[in-house]
Image (cartoon, rainbow, N blue to C red; front, side):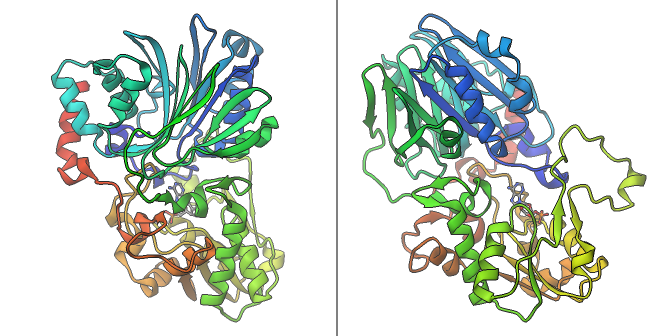
Length: 491
Ligand code: AMP
């Protein structure tokens, strides 16, 4: 889910904090539903660290708790968990950019409808939410938050259909975009993936209870079994009768799962789309070594995101893998923002070069992506200052040349280093002796395919190719003006 005003006013890459997408979780039929949800959210903390929330249902009433911060703090108190009564719950970790991190935007969102209460949480980004929002506002809907997810709430409320499921189908047929949703009503738990399945959503079982989660690591933490992924365009309805599957969007279209989940977003111990994220990342590293070999002494990952690809590069090239950069794991949001004077000292909060090892070596640095080039520039400079003789950078994604409109924070296109320079220019900008990216076909090979099929590519790779599989309706209609006027309306 995305926030309309935040997308306009802030840039997630303006600070040094780790930014991810959202995580959704849902459980039906467990006596400790809220506690299990908190654990699942904890395993998916990497997908969102700004805020979390849980809504539970005890067959009579809904209970909720939402707060800014991380799961371990928000749900650490027994009181909080014991107030979240019931055998069904949904939960959400929110990834937001800086700007307005307001409690009113923290999911799950909840509404009281004609049919009773419903809570909903969303991972992804709708591409026509501004248009829908302005129509709804014109018809009298009063929005409480700035989140695109709230559009779904109002579409549910204004639908003339009878049941929750029928209204949900009615609502989702009007939205465009990428979404994996979990919703909870008195009639049960609903999980949905958009027709192209851009964002992940998996089904698990823990004893007799059913679980929905963005990533399979959420099953591991609670000892649940992975059953299968929710299919693209599938809606699953879970209640006392079990799990029922429907396909509300008509003809099945070829799936376009987000390839960047494999490259960077998901945890390496997750299995996405039937593929081990760790294995894929290692194979990308191997492909990269085949495509862009270079004489050097050692392969060094930029931790943590570059580790599996660096391992693969090392195996394929025969060069030793070493921890030449060490990451401080205690860099968090609570750290005092440095003053300008301290910032100018070039404080290395997150990464430090392992000088004793690096000195005099020709190193290959492996990272997952270059977005604006800030990280690579800093790291190359740091490794040189630690005495490296040569610094070669290898990136386990193709150049990030286009913004994502499907739920991954990317700066405006003109801020992307790859849209400003060719590879040689980028190498110069980051100060590397050489720079190479995995080719798009190499990436698809690492995913077990022959290459990228130009007619029906198996993944959404719009950030590399500019091939956007879902229409960018708000964007194409001059979103800035629309967004601004809408924000004025809701302000
Ligand atoms: P930059 O410093 O702007 O070039 O960003 C590149 C670094 O940010 C890489 O090391 C990635 O690990 C990380 N990264 C890539 N995509 C994202 C994203 N959408 N949100 C946050 N971090 C990202």
